[in-house]
Each structure stands twice: as structure tokens, then as C-alpha cells.
Image (tube, rainbow, N blue to C red; front, side, top):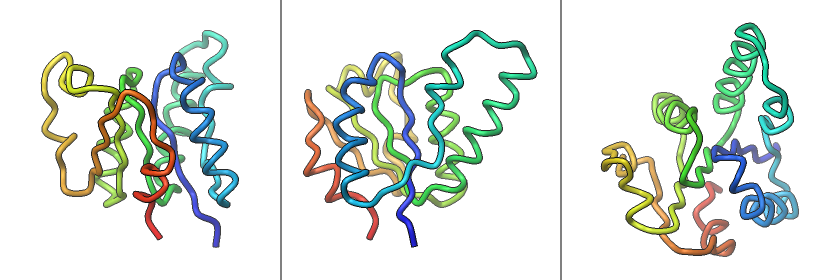
Length: 132
């Protein structure tokens, strides 16, 4: 059975995410949905509706949600969806200021959230946090 993940972050973190995505792929993990290609072009309400449904389906089909803060507008929606579905969340923030901006979020400290705070993404630590 494939190990599946969904990645939530902002496009401007794509370079940092690329290293993590490569490590996951090399360990047999499969991404449930890649939203970056769909959001390249500005869309209309119908296209955005389809993207929203695809993103939530990606979270639902994943075994784990990976979050790189700061995130985009939908990142905390995806965190909420994962937690509502009982999915584990691995959340990375480069520092406490980013984690708590614009204000502290109680859901970052939910029991199903593994919180990693480090300037750079430590791939080995991230991989150790993945569900078996």
C-alpha cells in the first residue's frame, strides 16, 4: 500500500519544499495532489471551486499532512480538515515569530500535530516524524 501525503505551503517556499518532496519520493511516498500547477493561472469562481474541492480531496486521501509555514490562504483550512479527519500533521516553521504570526494558533499545538521549528528544514527529522 502506498504511503500518501499532502503538502500545504506557499508557492514561495517551493524551493525548500523541493528537497523534502524528493526525499519523500525516494522513500516511496506519493503526493495526493499538487496544487501548484492548477494555481499558475488566475481562474474564475468555478475553477477556484474545483481547486478547493481537489485540495480537500488531497487532504482526505493522504496518510499525513505536511505543512511548511508560512502558508498560503488555504493552509489553515487544510490543517483543520486534516485534524477533523483524524490525520496526523507535521508542521514546520522556521522560527517562533513565523509560527505565532499574526497571532498564536491553538491548532498548531493540537495533539495530532508534530511541531518542528528550525531555520532550515531538517529532512532526516521530518522523515522520522512520518507515520509508519
